[in-house]
Length: 133
Image (cartoon, rainbow, N blue to C red; front, side):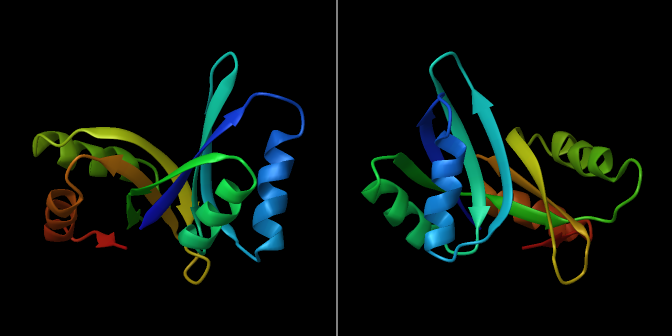
Protein backbone atom coordinates (compact mmCIF):
# COMPACT_ATOMS: atom_id res chain seq x y z
CA UNK A 1 0.00 0.00 0.00
CA UNK A 2 1.14 3.53 -0.65
CA UNK A 3 0.72 6.27 1.89
CA UNK A 4 0.84 10.00 1.20
CA UNK A 5 2.61 12.03 3.89
CA UNK A 6 1.78 15.72 3.75
CA UNK A 7 3.87 18.30 5.59
CA UNK A 8 1.44 21.06 6.46
CA UNK A 9 1.56 24.31 8.37
CA UNK A 10 -0.46 24.33 11.61
CA UNK A 11 -2.96 27.03 10.75
CA UNK A 12 -6.70 27.41 10.44
CA UNK A 13 -8.17 25.78 7.34
CA UNK A 14 -5.17 23.64 6.35
CA UNK A 15 -6.95 20.30 6.75
CA UNK A 16 -9.98 21.63 4.87
CA UNK A 17 -7.70 22.73 2.03
CA UNK A 18 -6.07 19.28 1.88
CA UNK A 19 -9.40 17.47 1.91
CA UNK A 20 -10.78 19.93 -0.64
CA UNK A 21 -7.93 19.16 -3.06
CA UNK A 22 -8.62 15.44 -2.66
CA UNK A 23 -12.34 16.04 -3.19
CA UNK A 24 -11.65 17.90 -6.45
CA UNK A 25 -9.66 14.89 -7.65
CA UNK A 26 -12.35 12.40 -6.59
CA UNK A 27 -9.97 10.75 -4.12
CA UNK A 28 -11.32 8.90 -1.09
CA UNK A 29 -9.44 8.96 2.23
CA UNK A 30 -9.27 5.37 3.48
CA UNK A 31 -7.29 6.00 6.67
CA UNK A 32 -5.45 8.91 8.22
CA UNK A 33 -3.41 10.06 11.20
CA UNK A 34 -2.12 13.53 12.00
CA UNK A 35 0.92 14.38 14.11
CA UNK A 36 1.61 18.00 14.90
CA UNK A 37 4.32 20.19 16.35
CA UNK A 38 4.33 23.90 17.12
CA UNK A 39 4.37 25.14 13.53
CA UNK A 40 4.03 22.15 11.20
CA UNK A 41 2.37 18.77 11.21
CA UNK A 42 2.50 15.58 9.23
CA UNK A 43 -0.73 14.20 7.83
CA UNK A 44 -0.37 10.57 6.82
CA UNK A 45 -3.10 9.14 4.61
CA UNK A 46 -3.92 6.01 2.72
CA UNK A 47 -6.11 7.15 -0.16
CA UNK A 48 -7.82 5.62 -3.17
CA UNK A 49 -5.20 7.07 -5.59
CA UNK A 50 -1.91 8.01 -3.92
CA UNK A 51 -0.15 9.10 -7.13
CA UNK A 52 -2.88 11.57 -8.15
CA UNK A 53 -3.27 12.82 -4.58
CA UNK A 54 0.43 13.51 -4.27
CA UNK A 55 0.58 15.30 -7.64
CA UNK A 56 -2.46 17.48 -6.84
CA UNK A 57 -1.17 18.41 -3.38
CA UNK A 58 2.31 19.22 -4.72
CA UNK A 59 0.73 21.42 -7.39
CA UNK A 60 -1.04 23.36 -4.61
CA UNK A 61 2.23 23.95 -2.74
CA UNK A 62 2.18 21.16 -0.17
CA UNK A 63 5.31 19.13 0.50
CA UNK A 64 4.41 15.46 0.04
CA UNK A 65 6.12 12.12 0.11
CA UNK A 66 4.85 8.68 -0.80
CA UNK A 67 5.82 5.79 1.43
CA UNK A 68 5.18 2.07 1.33
CA UNK A 69 3.08 0.90 4.27
CA UNK A 70 1.46 -2.40 5.09
CA UNK A 71 -2.21 -3.00 5.77
CA UNK A 72 -3.37 -5.98 7.80
CA UNK A 73 -7.02 -6.91 8.05
CA UNK A 74 -7.87 -7.98 11.59
CA UNK A 75 -10.92 -9.25 13.41
CA UNK A 76 -12.76 -6.65 15.46
CA UNK A 77 -12.19 -8.22 18.85
CA UNK A 78 -10.50 -7.30 22.10
CA UNK A 79 -6.76 -8.01 22.11
CA UNK A 80 -6.28 -8.68 18.40
CA UNK A 81 -3.97 -5.72 17.84
CA UNK A 82 -1.92 -6.75 20.87
CA UNK A 83 -1.58 -10.30 19.52
CA UNK A 84 -0.36 -8.99 16.16
CA UNK A 85 2.14 -6.62 17.79
CA UNK A 86 3.38 -9.43 20.04
CA UNK A 87 4.04 -11.59 16.98
CA UNK A 88 6.06 -8.76 15.44
CA UNK A 89 7.95 -8.10 18.68
CA UNK A 90 8.75 -11.80 19.08
CA UNK A 91 10.10 -11.72 15.50
CA UNK A 92 12.29 -8.71 16.38
CA UNK A 93 10.30 -6.41 14.05
CA UNK A 94 9.87 -2.79 15.07
CA UNK A 95 6.75 -0.82 14.12
CA UNK A 96 7.46 2.89 13.54
CA UNK A 97 3.81 3.97 13.68
CA UNK A 98 0.33 2.64 12.99
CA UNK A 99 -3.21 3.83 12.46
CA UNK A 100 -6.62 2.40 11.73
CA UNK A 101 -8.61 2.10 8.52
CA UNK A 102 -11.30 -0.40 7.58
CA UNK A 103 -12.26 -2.63 4.70
CA UNK A 104 -15.40 -1.12 3.23
CA UNK A 105 -16.41 -4.49 1.73
CA UNK A 106 -15.97 -6.73 4.77
CA UNK A 107 -16.38 -4.06 7.46
CA UNK A 108 -13.27 -5.38 9.21
CA UNK A 109 -10.60 -3.10 10.67
CA UNK A 110 -7.34 -2.68 8.79
CA UNK A 111 -4.24 -1.75 10.74
CA UNK A 112 -1.95 0.37 8.58
CA UNK A 113 1.62 0.55 9.75
CA UNK A 114 5.08 1.54 8.73
CA UNK A 115 8.15 -0.55 9.40
CA UNK A 116 11.59 -1.00 7.90
CA UNK A 117 11.16 -4.22 5.95
CA UNK A 118 7.66 -4.64 4.57
CA UNK A 119 8.44 -7.96 2.87
CA UNK A 120 9.68 -9.43 6.16
CA UNK A 121 6.56 -8.21 7.97
CA UNK A 122 4.29 -9.59 5.23
CA UNK A 123 5.92 -13.02 5.43
CA UNK A 124 5.82 -13.03 9.23
CA UNK A 125 2.14 -12.12 9.51
CA UNK A 126 0.95 -14.28 6.63
CA UNK A 127 2.68 -17.26 8.24
CA UNK A 128 0.55 -16.61 11.33
CA UNK A 129 -2.68 -16.48 9.32
CA UNK A 130 -3.18 -12.73 8.98
CA UNK A 131 -4.66 -11.26 5.79
CA UNK A 132 -2.09 -8.74 4.52
CA UNK A 133 -3.19 -6.25 1.87
